[in-house]
Amino acid sequence: MIFEKKPNIFKRIKNKIAKIKSCVKFIMRHNIKSNNNVLFLSSAEIKGKNLIQLIYYFTSSGYNCYLDFSFRQCLKLNIHGINAISLQGVFPISKETPKNSIVISPNKKSLDLFDTNALKIYLRYLEIEKGFRNIKDVSENDLYYPIGLHPILYFPSIYGANTPNAKSDLNFSVETETLKHVFNTERKIGILFAGAIYSKKDGHTKKYSRDSIKEKFHVDNRYDVFSYITEKLSKELIYIPDNLEIFLNDMESGTLRNKIVLIERNAFSIPYDKYFNVLLKTNFFIHMSGVEYPFCHNQIESMLAGCIPITQFARFFLPHFTHESDSLLFNELDDLFSLLTSVTSGKYSSHLDSMRKGIINYYQNNFSIESFKNKLHFLLENEKKHANFWIVIP
Image (cartoon, rainbow, N blue to C red; front, side, top):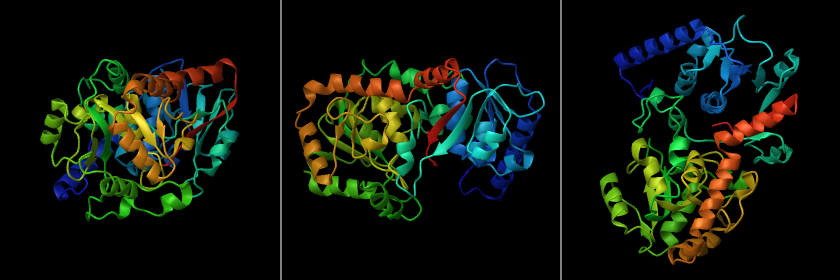
């Protein structure tokens, strides 16, 4: 289900009716018996994108998810929340809800008061206002998945996205499909960044040029990084395409192997059915910060496709990246200049395969569904009663 951003009155009414129907279907849905179940307490306190991410991890690991939404709370959900309650394997909490299920909640008090002998998972948020200072509290047995793929890539069909093979949400896995091709696809792009730089509403840079990123996290904001690259590096090294067709033709021609390709979303977006094909043909991806904090979905998506990160904030990834093993790291923008010129001159050509293996191993050990299953299995096998799931508010 997709809601238009600025629908006319008729579309608005249609969307409202569709939303009500989704809420009714959820409240009336009967659970399907399973030995693996997760109860979400204080579900209304979980942001829609976070809820989609959590449901993806648990349902992909063979769990049914039970949410404690009331009908009124359902009606207040955004598109991601509505899509979350529409997914297979998601049910309302009721008298039929299985006992001794795993319990997860962002509300510590409700979690502590819940009477169960099963594993309790406290959904903890990295503190944006304090520059992720509480990252020091992450322990070895915690589930650290601060950000994942964009929700559309987890469940393409329910968002109406045009993605290949997206026939069934629970049977289709963009992760599995992408990993099949990481080591057998010819890389035709040297360095890539694809994302928004300017605000769609008014075309200026305010959204991605906030000083708060520098003040809180000591990293440069997206606009400053983008501007530095376009102003300081040779124009012969930079490629900024005007439209998708020209870009795809140039990519396939092989002329972008030693180029820094910058795709600004307001010029054009890469469609979902072509997105991972482009990433799979890219050697390096520049990590640029999001609006409020350093993390962004495209960082995880590019890692999944075997793109080697060029990043300023390895310290926020746990465990940290290792320079020239699974990534290229820089502290200041002048360091980035040196890295980009070194990459485009071919300095790392003989290290590409080893670094790609490094970042794929990193992804599989720390961000993949299999890694989540393994960590959850460890907690259950060792009869742990408490754990933290770390995430960042979208």
